[in-house]
Amino acid sequence: MSLSLGFLNAKLIFCLCVTFLKHHFTFSASNPTGLSLRAVLDDSSGSPLYLIENLTIAERIERLIKVTNARANYLSLVSNRDARIHPDNIPMPILREGLFYVVEFAIGSQHHKVKLLMDTGGGLIWTQCVPCKTCFPQNLPIFNPSASVTYARLPCDHPLCKGPGDRYTCFDGFCVYNVHYTGGASTRGTASLETFHFSIDQSEIESFKNVIFGCSDDSSDIFFKNTDISGIFGLSMSPDSMMIQFSSFIHSRFSYCLVPFADAIPRPLVLRFGEDIPQLPPDVRTTSFVQSPTNHFYYLELWGISVAGHRLPFSQSTFQYRANGKGGCFIDSGALFTQIDAGTVGINAYAAVMQVFASYYESKSLRRTTSRGFELCYERPPNYDDFASLTFHFNGADYTVAGEYVNLISPDIFCVAIIKGTYATMLGAWQQQNKRLIYDVGMGALQFADENCVNDVS
Image (cartoon, rainbow, N blue to C red):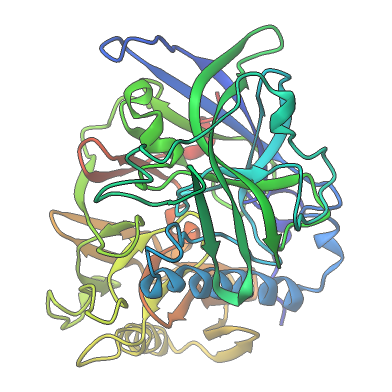
């Protein structure tokens, strides 16, 4: 039996070069504002898409599962952070086989080109700078702040460096950061101010002055060494992220719609901000974000789960954020497959959900088979398409995933594409296919609706 992942050959969406499509920007926050980013595939030698078609089917499955598990392991570190010692212990996607967005733009008066990993879980925007104490090798030239007349170091009296909301530490008159990640990776440097330049088209550039970013001069164990990538572009609710810093220009909203991965035709992905987000359909649903005491992820209040219309007997407290820093549920575009927490109090939520899936498919007299990494896989009879749906019952809104996007399906085998969570429940990208997702930080809520995402390409 084989599980065909041929769609991986050309269009895994999570490692992408991003450029501006259009921009209705003014410096007056009261006027309509918006922008869109077009994501195109990066198949360079440094990309995880490079020669992926040469892997066996089993190796491809194993790679994707490792990505999701590694993502969860790295994100889990934030629950143990010491804000004073490591003031921005953010969830960096340092996955050796990571599949993430890459945003390309220029910084400084000399318009120095950089490529940064885009991360909805990350806060601080940072890139490597010279002179270096310990820099990892990168293909593009390293940014030299002394060559830019628009560069400045963030002073110690800035709110992010002094006061109740500080994220950096004052040293020798300037703000510095020391970011540590699971697995031993770290980056250190000076919190800085610089002008960011984005290309709208071949003839027009939009510039943003005094953007707070990190100028890293001492990094270790960073996975994307020897590529074009030099740092992180954060989109979380952290005060130093792109989302918060640009909030007055983009109305604190961004949106995307993931084209189904099984489509064999590579298509662009558009990340939309502010007024460029499409008008919401009548059936849009809204659930509020839940603030975490230790990080800036997009947490949601999950009250229960249903499989194939059968609601499991979870209490409303099952998926709550726990005192030990674990638990809760958040949405993450950086995790490919959904994880369900196996450490929930009183009941193993992951085991309970998978048992219902097993019972459902056993009632269809399907034969179990094995596939590296997934717990539940079945032989698929000819023309079988009776796949179980999955519903997350959030506070105020039900998020239902059609069976075709719950499972990883091929002509002769399919697997329930859910992985055991070790510290929290994550709604991954696989279960976000053909959904319009709007992260509205101003409203403090996630909005979503079904949509044919193949039409969202311009």
